[in-house]
Image (tube, rainbow, N blue to C red; front, side, top):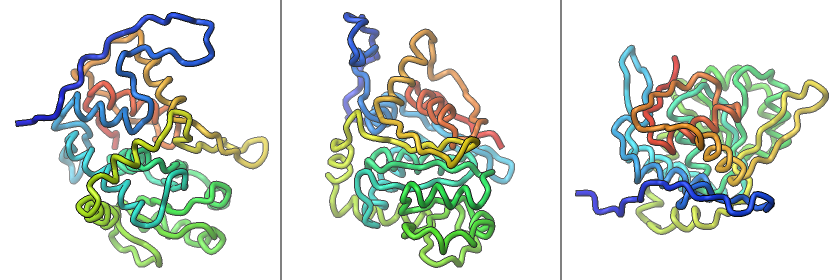
Length: 278
């Protein structure tokens, strides 16, 4: 039996002062950070099929409970590597549950993630990694590493490479996502209150992600997007629509784009079953 307290249904509140510069919550229990958004979603919408993806021609699923546990383990795994609040990690991979879970792990730990388009040229990837001072670089697989391996000697701040698919990887300073999660799970056993402390330390104005512009008129610029920015977009985007657990969204646009990121948070917050396009 699940003894976790149930979160009451969100209720719309009236905007009392439209001239105020501060955001007035639309919901009585509106989350302040992405960590709170994920926690509310996991408690309120306990799905067996929160994330869905195809493997060997068959649909596989990740439950809400698994999402929560794995995201916390990723957060603590990064902590075990020495990363702390406001440190940077980069993600270069196609859309997948691992992408979403890694992002969630960063948000639980107050770590700023830097999404990188899979189609970017090597020199652009190198520029972003150096400019953001990325410490941990998440890569999809060994083929991605082989394509980029010439740039790594120039990326002085990278301390660790983490692979979603570790098959064939021989790179130095590399580990699998599964190994990172195992480190986090061990730390959770040792310090069960740490994940809660990390999440509580995050404030609404803290930077959640660093999104780089295309660089068409010069070098790409890193745009700092706060937890409050994203929460506002997620809540306001759903204000005039009746999203429910019965809706089934398809994740098609790259998660490296902020529009798809916001949509993903909207899906999860409203308890939808997300399907990743092949």
